[in-house]
Length: 369
Image (cartoon, rainbow, N blue to C red; front, top):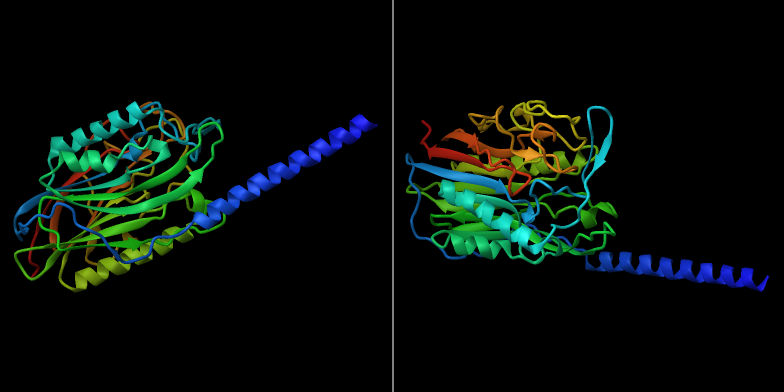
């Protein structure tokens, strides 16, 4: 009987300790949770002096570098999927496999930028001080390689230590959007997207945002370049609609001023009819949403890459990557106003250094009659 009482007391004590530990951890997350204010003006590092010119051709690249984790072997713990035969799959890792992998992938992504040498470059998932990327400062690596560009950095993920998954914790994260410009930038503003602030999701999803850079031209109008990263996890699509409404309102406002407007980045929506464009052995993931032409404001268009049905820009991360096996689609690209002539190409990087491929667009500003 004494032994049973001792065992019962021990179990109760362990349960109390577990409850206090879990409660204390949740309190720690809640106390340290905050959203970055909307409308913050961002500093412009290494400023340039030359203006862009109407009628001249320029180039811009968008690339989600995936915090340096995504080589072909990497899968992400938050992503789930299903094979065509019904078999369920789930990603494994909460952070990159090693610091060396993050460094190699970051330098590999940098080499793609160097290959194309764009006039402007907009990058997403750039870590500065994160457990998941072994505290490799990707921003410093990229900025130091492009010292003839000015740069603007807007943070969009700032989490306390996330101990999940238990076998490979995601940890604390500092990450954001990086914009590079060979030309003068007058001002840069960080705009906060609406996000899911439900109790658990808010700790794991990014503090989504877009960064507006105002680039003077040789006219009285501006080139407005927007670096955007929209939500991926949005059951029911409510957050998606709220984010699109905000983005649309900004596009219309800038166009009505007579400005030249480009928004690019990771839309986390299948673009240009690519939701089923590429062969795979997986079903369409639940997180896939489609961006329809009807959702784009008047006077704007999604720029369909010349090879849009040949080269995808994003692969599923619920399993390691094998070409023809993983689900793929085009989630990255550009939307431009009708006073911009543009053509784009999806660059086939074989998802070597990220779960995304870059997209490069050549464009020319024109004066509408």
